[in-house]
Amino acid sequence: MDFLKVSSKSSPASVAGAIAGMVKDGVPVNMQCVGAGAVNQAVKALAIARGFLIPTGVDISCAPTFSDIDIGGEKRTAIRFAVYVHRLTPQSTSADAMDDRGVVA
Image (tube, rainbow, N blue to C red):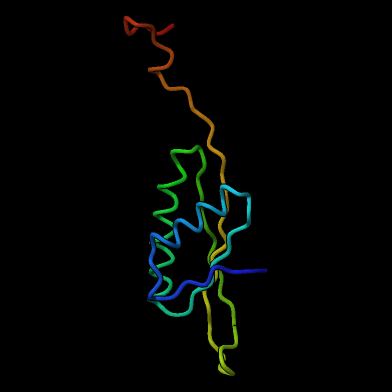
């Protein structure tokens, strides 16, 4: 499984664009972060991507997990985010049920 690797120096807007593009293309999105700064950038990217996607009728959520990984012979703990896609359906509101005079139909 491939991961978007997010570092503390990653641009949240760039990562958000990658997330939104992958979601629109139907590609599973998984991110991997090592360190508090990287997790911070990843969470910001998720929030920005959500803002990109909601107007298109798509929402996302995520599930974080811990993973022990090896970086240069050193054991590190990473946080991985699995991104879930939710298709939004229009909800009727009370305003939708009213006619031009404001009377409920």
